[in-house]
Image (tube, rainbow, N blue to C red; front, side, top):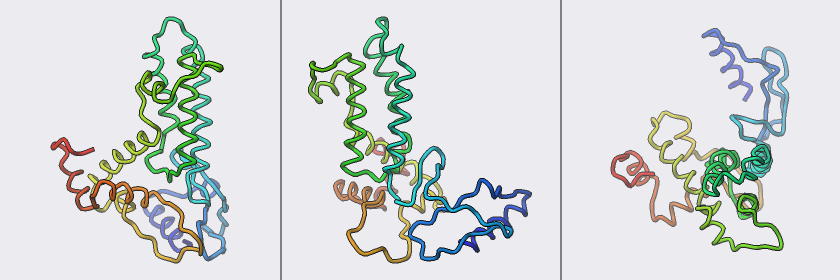
Length: 234
């Protein structure tokens, strides 16, 4: 990492760019070396998490912190629109559309690359269900079944919604150049040995599990992704 950092600084300087040392952070994920990373003799700060393009990346390597932050942001977005939800002039359909575009979009930002598990899916689903009930003005002791709630608000399950977003993103990514880092990352297998114990679920494993259910493989997906006009692409 030290050599790569120095190399990036050199290439940047050659085109008139410089790296802001105060804004540059270092996050080490399962790194064997604990040596500090320096730039021009100055030690860069080690952190356990940082926000990149609106998503939280941390040393745990999962999505728990990002999902928690997304739920908080979506809750704040919902509360800012209190007058909308309380309005007698707006229909339920209009309110649901606003919820989808102004709240749900905030909640599921970056969900395409989440490392999902049962706990994460449940947290996201509980949030969506609770606030849809508020929009429909259903409060205890009144109840409504989940199936009827989704039917009245034209919703997919959180799991299916995230899966659809993931596969749309995969389709766009597979249409990129083979030199694109994002595309390479889909099938990249990092070198090294993992720690002892049960292996953790990853985004790649989630994608591969979906492919297995679809009885497909990467080559077939690449073919489908390139055939954008066939109607079978995502």
